[in-house]
Every structure is written in C-alpha cells, then in structure tokens.
Length: 449
Ligand code: AMP
Ligand code: ZN
Image 1: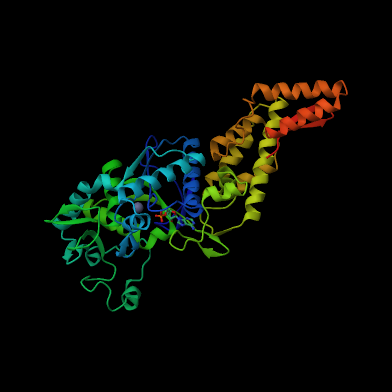
Image 2: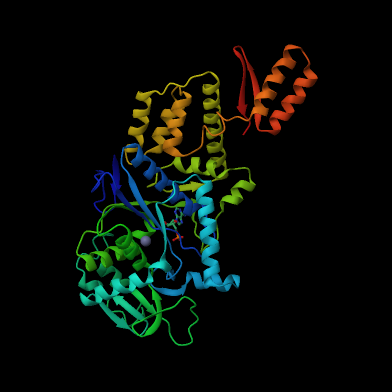
C-alpha cells in the first residue's frame, strides 16, 4: 500500500511500526460552527484510508480530536478564540456551542457512513496534560514568557522549518513590523495564552499563577502522546495545516520527547465552489442538509468526493453532484439486478484489481472506472461497500416483504391483463422508490432514485 508522505514529499510504501495496531491521528474540526462540505471532504478521504488499511490486513487504532478551545481566528495566535466568538454570536455559553456543533458534526459523520474513530478526544479534557507538556518544554529550555502567554522559541528547534520547507528568512522579511512585538522570532507560537484582566474569555484554567487557556497546536501534541504514544504511524489533516499547525505540533512533540513524532503525514487538498476557496469564515459554502434539500443524499456527496483524489483541488458543482448521484444509482441497480439474477460469486481477480487501485495512493477514481467497466456480482458490490462505504447494496437483500408482495401482485395482474390494477400497483411501488422493468427474462425491480 502506497501513500504520499508529506514528510518526504514522496509516494512511499506504507510500513507500520506494528501492523496489529496502526496508530493514526486525525485533526478534527473546530466546533464553533456547522461543519461544511469542505470539512467533510477531508473526513471522507480519511475514511477511505482506514477502510483500505483494514482490507490490507492492518488494524488501525485511530484518534480524532474536537477542538473546543484555543483555536484563534488567525492560525498565527491572533484574534479571538473561535469558540468564544461563536458563543457571542449565538448568545450561548462556549460549552453549549461546543456541544451543539460537536453533536452536529458526529451526526453528519454517521450519516456519511464514515468509520467511527476508536476514540474522540475533546481538547478541553486534556488541559492538565497540556500544562505538563508546556512544563516539559520549559524545563528543556524551549519556551519564554511574554505578557500574553508562553511561547515556543522556534530558534531553539533547528529543524523547525523542515516539515513545511519554510523559508524563514522570507517569513522574517515579510513579517509586519508590529507582529506581536514581544515574540522573539516571527515563527514562534503560543503554547499557552494568558487571559488579561477584564478580557472576556469564559474557558479558563489556572496555570503559572494566572488564568489562561491552551494554544491550538498543543492539544494535538498532548492527545497524541497521551492516547497513542511518542511515535505514531499516520497523521492526517488538510494541507492548510502543513505550514503552521502540523509544523508546530512536530516542534512541540519532538522537542519534548526527543522522538520522531510521526512516520507518515497525509494531507488532503481543498475543494472550491465557483472556483473560490470555501471556508466557514467566508461563509460561502453548503451544509449537507442544503444538498439534501436539492435532492442529494450525503452518500451522493461522498460518491462525488471519492471520484476525485485527496491530493487534487476540485471544484464543487451541482452538475457534477448530479452525475455522481446517477453513477451511484446505476451501481445500486446493477447490484439489485445481480442479486435478483442470483449472481453472488465473488470475483477474486477483480477484487485484487480494485484493491490495487486504491493501494496506489488511494486512487479511488481508478477503482471506480474498473467497477464501471466490469461485470459485477452482488458479492463484488458487497466488497465495494466494505471498501468505500457507499451503501450500494443497502436494502437489496432486505427488500421489505410488502414490496416483494406488490411486485408479485403486479406480475399476476399483468398476466391476467388487469392493467388498471397493475398501474395502481406500479404507482404504489414508485411511492416506495421502486420501479419494475419488464425484460425478456422476466421482470426486474430497480430503485427509482
Ligand atoms: P476546521 O474545522 O476549520 O479546523 O477544519 C476541519 C478540516 O476541514 C481541516 O482538516 C481542514 O483542512 C478541512 N477543510 C476546511 N475547508 C476545506 C475545504 N474547502 N476543502 C477541503 N477540506 C477543507
Ligand atoms: Zn491537530
């Protein structure tokens, strides 16, 4: 199984530290607003990663975090905490906001049929451990205090620029003169933020004798260390995380524990709408419910995502979504036809070919074209469901008895040339999303949509 590793900028054969427990960490959402289709794009690709690992015989252990404190409006430690901002916007407490949007995220995550993480960790549950990590970094001489927090001194960590191939001279030259003037280096970042007197920040913990809250990156370094250990196999996130968030996670973790943090870093690219970057802060995006209002299920959206590659930029359009929906319906009806014809034998050769496609850096598009151009049995589609979680075979074997009865009654009515009755039954079937097609070898039912 090959993956593109951001660490080496190469496609590499994936080798786990221990195949029986492949340690994986996914940076989760900041739960201050509804997760949008852009956010879910990345989690759909990570679902494919997990499913592919499993089909290759690995046993993943995966942690997902929920950022419910410390992610500031700008990734560079400036601006308001996103959760506090959400709370003001909605006139709710930060805790209510975090709970509401966490639940929303997890509900949609389930509707998309994404493999649940083995554990979901809230940043606020790890603040004591964050403090310990900051203590360790301070003991090792990596930190300094300013009037607004404890900062990581990136000049003390010589490999800081390596991961993102940062040009620090360029960054320095481009920095605004007034960049948080107490920072020693432009790339230094907050491990912990102090809450100034009179500052409105509901989430607060006492540390170093004053109220404060953890910086954004420390939660991931802490949770990884607490839940998975010093070195993990795979860390996933969006490409936006490379230059700041993941660079800082690596600095924190490797400076504190003197061990390589992670062997494979996998990053997903962004989707655009009308060729514009979409984001919660710009507000130019869709929620899954908005797609449903236009007749597209979350699984149609998942189909659209998996038609592309996690490293490519893609532009979202309803025309393309409609094409994905049709393709999924076509697969569902092929699976239904195969089931009705009793074609159930698994084609091992085909399975190997499809698995080879995704093993090549998660090339689902290639796998999809193999599916389109081959005869697929019902069991082959079952395998497709295991691999992609698109629920192609859902509801086929378990077609409700009353539908089966209606299909039979329609056939009998047609045999008796009772076309009124057969039309009536056809109407009833279509209300249940089923259509019956008459073919030379008898009638075959299909899904309408
Ligand atoms: P956030 O909740 O802002 O921390 O984002 C959660 C995840 O969604 C991150 O991994 C981002 O990289 C990813 N993400 C945000 N916007 C997009 C987008 N337009 N396309 C793909 N992924 C995105
Ligand atoms: Zn993270």
